[in-house]
Image 1 (cartoon, rainbow, N blue to C red):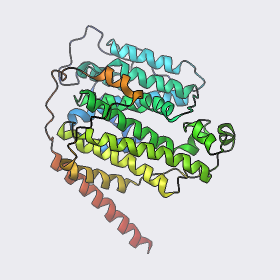
Image 2 (cartoon, helix red, strand yellow; image 1 turned 90 degrees about the horizontal axis):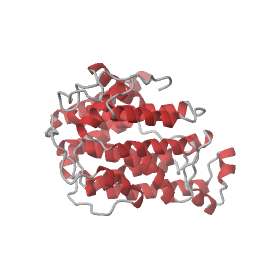
Image 3 (tube, rainbow, N blue to C red; image 1 turned 60 degrees about the horizontal axis):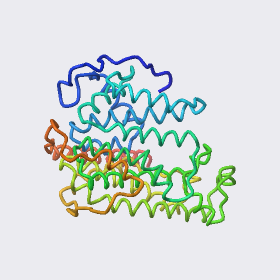
Image 4 (cartoon, rainbow, N blue to C red; image 1 turned 135 degrees about the vertical axis):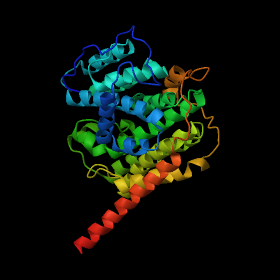
Length: 370
């Protein structure tokens, strides 16, 4: 956020513990509403899936995603300021010290990391990924793309697992798989948009194998069948990780599974949209329509009890093992509220009703056009 103050929050390092499960020390109700608004406008896929989260997880997740959103925007909007990432690190240091900056996301996240014992290394990894963005780093191999994705998205998966008190190493490994898969999908979708901004996240070795010189492509981004084959390879890698991640959903608290399953379905659908366009993500940007997102969310809510009970014991990707080590605990987090289904049937009914309303509106619009 441009010009955000570094003033101290309302409570210092010696403040008493939060009065509730998450809130009461730094963030006000207005701060929490501001975080929700940031996500509703800035991360629509996550917001749609989040409607299925229990409130005990949804609000802390909004705080975390709001901080991610403002951090990403700060790096993107102020590229000339070489110290943007360093300033974000100072803000992170301050909120972990109990002195959050004067911003709703900082105050809300300070409450969350204190209550949930979110390892600072996870958020530091995220900021390191933003630094790689700022520096325009390129990646020769898929493993190097995994390194980047582990920081900007695997870390997000690990934090979400921590918020759900799912801190077993195997579950964290699957959460990181899902985060990396989503980032690969983002890269595949945004090839043209990134290239026009001077950024390239596809493995440059793959491009050269197809006879595409990376610098020449950035100078004049155009779609070719050869480029489509590179995008397809990346989406194939994402599909493998989505499959690896699937068993981990069954090891999350029952009330959290529909939302995470919905996020997985929605992001995989983005890849399907890219594939439907013959992997051309240069001349167009794949978008999943809102009605389709809601239908997938309803499907996740309806089918969550039928999730695979496989234990998903595949080892973590080498590139995400540092995140798993940082987040894993020998015992569950103490003092966390039990996660009951939290009105899951009501949430499912709400999603179906909203989907039906959108369908009815489309039909009405069609009749008017006739």
